[in-house]
Image 1: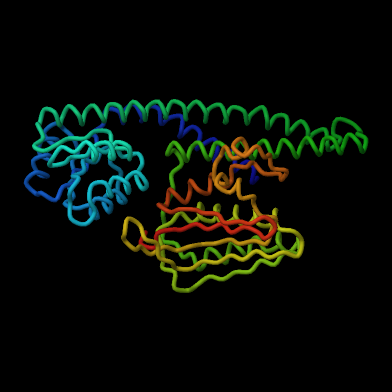
Image 2: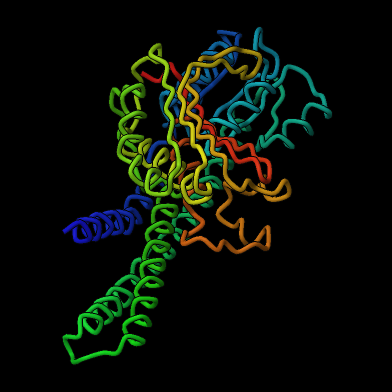
Length: 394
């Protein structure tokens, strides 16, 4: 019954992803959202009026801080950034956008020509660099040019993602057919089997399960990377969710004689999160700890408030950490633990029965919540995986 439900969900997600090609063609033609960021009211309103007359959906911000707040609330196709502003200047805002909203293209605007600033902004990801006073015709030409390239790139990524998702999904049908045949033979329904044959069928079944899990993870990851797997944010209490996950997984730890300890602070606020997705992240991290921690070891799960400085501004975060006393990760492999290609990059193939994609999916989920993940480890002493979620998300 559980497998049938999983298959239905995967089928639903796949066809939803496949149908997005039609919506993608509509999106190319839709009204582009543009954010104009400039502390000079008259100039900002002039730019907004000029682009509004061209049919763009234009929004305005008078400083970098307000611009980033708006970008966290909704997505924009393009941001026009003034270089010189009080507080956060254009370069600082550009860096933050590249980190927090990488799909938003940027055009820099300055009151004077400076080749050094132009080169720096282009290196940081800006697509164009304009100087004041801006010629309306030139502005419209540059904006349309950047947006055409942006939409073309998005269309190409959508095609690639659609093909990959379709291929992965189609592979699951013959795989399930083989798995059903193996199960049929293992039950001796077709006739008696020897002990050796039964053991061989068991090994085949285990490898088929691993392949199925890998395909499921790859479909999830493909959908996340293409924006096809939506998260549904609901008011969530992590001080209740984290202990509940630990209670559910405690029997697995106990079976391996591993002590699973929990330390969750009570001052964590209610947050807007997708509880199922966050539970998926936490479950993956704890199960990894159980797999890689030897008998008699310890796994400590904690959740607490912390502060991080982002663009010279302190923000409140909730940090959830899973620390184990397991085998640890070699220093040279640590930078690649969240990469879906880590086995190719490190040249190491996991001996555990895992797909190797779990941590990449975890990072995608956390990033979808505007959070970050990090890992610390030392061979022979264990590993600590942490994810940070903005506390002001409600």
